[in-house]
Length: 438
Image (cartoon, rainbow, N blue to C red; front, side, top):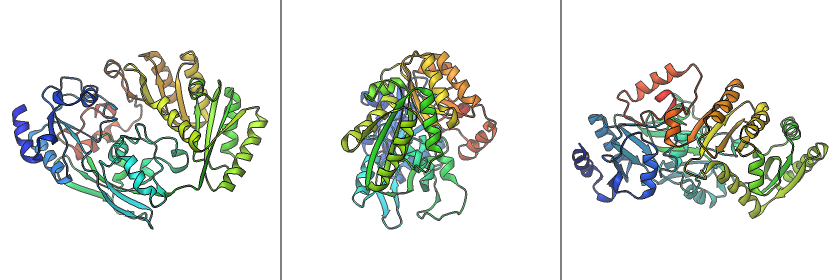
């Protein structure tokens, strides 16, 4: 079977450089792929099609032969999601990375899924625009991978998640046919909302090949304020901000351990970013200073390079694993219960947990140093009791085999399985990576 795959795919991709056995790849790809599958990858191939048409031919062949495949971009989040087995192909879209169209006046951009976010941001910056997306591994993350994993960061406080920016997508179906949904304009309401369905689907419904996104003007100025204090004072500060007219682009609640690593204090903190015209920033910070004074919170300020470094370091501290045994999870909880969850995690881990929760949405991330399933289960119970969730993203294979990494307790499993059956009847796309083993 191995030789048959190689012979057929070589006739499709045309170049030896675009097709390689997983065991012959570099250590980066081998490590990522090994963390993604349960069994051996000795017979699997990694393929890098350079055009969407070639990619479609590969999927069509896999469909005919019932070969299982996992799509990815640069592989930075390949180890997220559940474990797969019996995988023959890992298909990377990193060479499908063209800028299709940038409608500057309409504030929209269309790109192929393999384009890296950092490259797209550089292009948009030339017209004083940007995408308010700040995923983990921002130097490697591709647009398709960001959509497929619903990976956004602190900017969702103001701009929402990636699905809120999607206007249209093109994708390859499990049978190799190319399909599309949405369009290239902001006011587009025709057809089913496949953009939201594909966001966070982990490649289980189709392979995203092209996306159209809304862009935003670059803000004139930016400044960040950090408030530090005890749990109660921070909780009251969040409530005051929520009830005020303040419009931060980011507002993150972070644990004391993170605060210490960032060098901004010793207690729990709320870091708030304002990005607009200078006069508005000054007025909003003045209002925030009044709130801090009333609650006896310590306040510090960051701008220019110090501000950029602060936000980059925050993301790396929480969302990049510090060891091979580290566990990184995605949190969702009612915003008014965020401080309670933070305090519980600090108590469970002796103030060693690394936690960040977006104050407005209750979405966040945590990192644990070791394989402590008790902490995971208790934190998951707290989230679930407050209409939330705790999903494991990065974790040792032993943990993923031991626990349900998604922890889904809703009633939509049957519907999700029906959707999967319609889009991928032979279950060849990212099998086992999604909720409930889908």
